[in-house]
Amino acid sequence: MRRARSMSVLAMLLAGAIGVISSTQTWIDVTLDDGAQQTLAVPGAEALPVLTPLSLAALALGAALSIVGPVLRYVFGALGLAIAALVGFGTVQMLAATPVSATAATVTDATGISGTDAVAALVSNLSLTPWPAVTLLAQVVLAAAAVFTLITARGWTSGASRKYRTATEAGADSGRPHDAIDSWDDLSRGDDPTA
Image 1 (cartoon, rainbow, N blue to C red):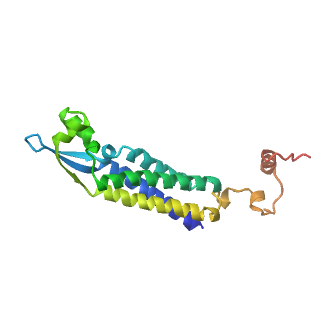
Image 2 (cartoon, helix red, strand yellow; image 1 turned 90 degrees about the vertical axis):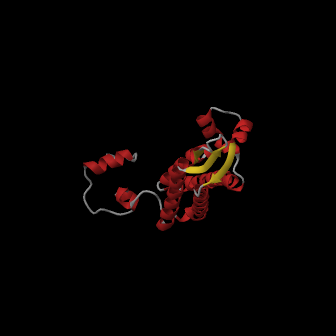
Image 3 (cartoon, rainbow, N blue to C red; image 1 turned 180 degrees about the horizontal axis):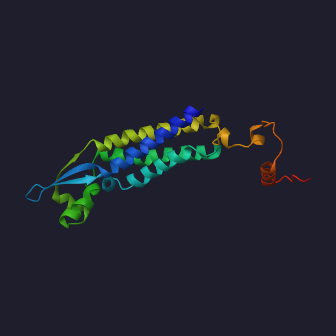
């Protein structure tokens, strides 16, 4: 089941990384009807404001999933599914009908004109780049990883590797005499070595 954990972690990290990269890329090319037919590039972080923070959260979930215990595996799987649903829903809305409101901040910065109606009157054409579709695909991968985590988390091995466990925890007898370090370990566990 170590492979299942690795697959879940890598898929979440990949989806989060693609989301972060996508937030810096151009999602919408906006052509303004200002006489010069000026074209502005709207990055993903402005087109879909939740993209960057939720993608960073997916990255954090993926990294933390590699070390958490059984209960948090289910919590992180559910959170990953929620992130995929939120970002995926926003991206699908963008792909279905690109709202002018997604470009408002960029148009206002370039022209000084604000207000949804004023911006809509100034925009003559909106065209999407491939990045929203790439982001949607990343969210599908994130959702699949989250569901896979929820299904397989029970069978994952514990986070601590054998080399970090003491001889008592590992159930092995070292066959050597009890020394001062072993006495300190006994005290750490709450056992009195002098008793």
